[in-house]
Length: 100
Image (cartoon, one colour):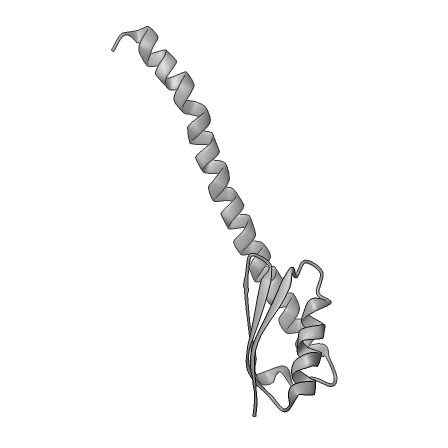
C-alpha cells in the first residue's frame, strides 16, 4: 500500500473509530442514569410514610423501572407505582409486585 493510500485509509477510518467510541460512552451514561434512577426510586419508596418498601426491589433499564417483591395489598402496590412515577426521569413503571 502506498503512503498516499495509507493516509487516505486512515482518514476514512478515523470517523468510524470515533463513532464507535461515542456509542460506548452513551451506554455508560445510560447505565449511570439507570443506577441514579434506581437509587432515587428506592429513596422515594423508603421515604413514603404509607408504603412498606422494605420488601420491594427496584431495577431500572433505559429509564424503565421494574418493581418486584411483596406488598401488603393492592392499594400499597398502587402507591408504590405512583411514588415511582413521580421520580423525575422515569419513563415507565412495570410492576411485578405480589400481594402477601
